[in-house]
Amino acid sequence: MTVRRIKAGDDTDLVWYVLEGYVDGVPAVTTRRTLAVAALVSGLIDLASEREALELEIAAKLVRWEALQALDDAS
Amino acid sequence: MTDVRKVPLPRLEGPVTRDYLAGVLRQVLAAYDPRNPQNDFAAGLVANDDGSVTLGNEAFPVGRVASVPTLAQHLSDTGRAANQRFLHPITVGNRNSVQSIDNVLTAASGPTTSTISIEAHSVKYDFGSVAYNSGSISGLDTETVYLVYGSDPELVGGAVTFYATEDPNDLIATGTYYVGSITTPAAGTSMTISTATSANPIECTTSTDHGWSTGNTVDFASMPGDFAVLNSGTHVITKTANNKFTVAVSGIGFAAYTSGGLATRIVADTAGGGGAGGGGGGSRWDGLVNLP
Image (tube, rainbow over all chains, first blue to last red; front, side, top):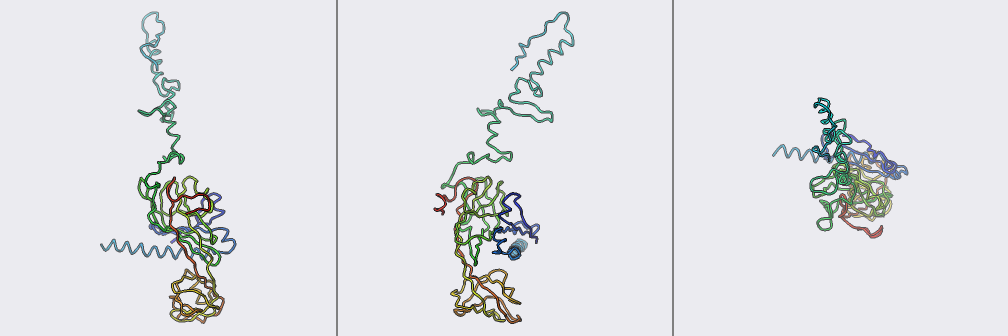
């Protein structure tokens, strides 16, 4: 699993901090989390916590996806 | 157009020579050579040095009165409509696209900020369906009406970045996919955790009556020592007393709780999508106030 920042390349990046988590070969679990820069700077939300939450979310998606693949293989 | 039957021949005195014939032939061929910028149809077609051709204002598709350049102005280089004026008109039920589920958006509030969650969904157009992965937007204001949108100019779908705005004008940029609107709920109440048991399940005692109910969801922060495991994610509680509740986490083997932990009830609300893809359809709004 990889988590990285996605930049829009324009003034949008001044307002929003976008995290994307993905697993190679499994596009269905790719998830983006948009964070308000103002809230990050003010300390109202924490980047590390948001990143951790994103990782947990993708891990859960991956489990469900792998269960689907196992079902396909069994049928 | 040159009528080759009427091409004036140079005055000839004497026998027909090779040069004479070559001159006549060059004159005729020049009129029909697309590489010649002065050819008879240069206003419609000119061949370029790289082998391509340029269609001019006198190039017309069969049966059309508008020239090719005029028609091409309505299309971008990617084949998309140059602007909304040339989109397919609204079709069924005042919509030109339909979302796959009703409650695409949900919002929840912690003690100070709100998060909007966008469920995985698809949007159906006349050309087929576009599927979007789930996403979220955090750090938003509580008790605020937000318009949620994503950027997907090519209508590819997948994992797109979702944004929230209070300004409808942000929705009309090219390539914007309007997901829908939602009001973030009021900030959740926060309680100090006086004690927490090293048992299964962990039972927390709040400093004052919490007023919560079984099935409510809470978010922990600053839980100390072994109890820090509760600081990640949210937890559904079971009320055991007016100032106590349990969470489905085992504290067996945890070092004794000290102090400083906080629990905040997450207040959730839901709203339908009502958005649309490119162009119109979906929910209407009349100004900032009367949003659906």
